[in-house]
Length: 57
Image (cartoon, rainbow, N blue to C red; front, side, top):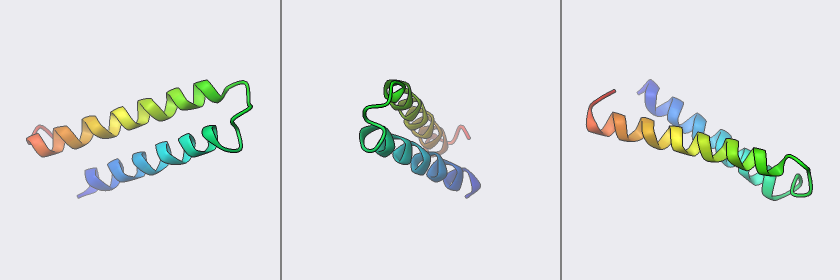
């Protein structure tokens, strides 16, 4: 249960960062880096979800 909550928090964080980088911070010089951080967070959440469903976690 705790792993699902952690995965959900990662997804919320990644979505928030992505929304900021494509919205108010679109013109910021580091917007690309923020999108990369969001992508890494989405990948980590997906990896955790797959590990949980497959029984490896």
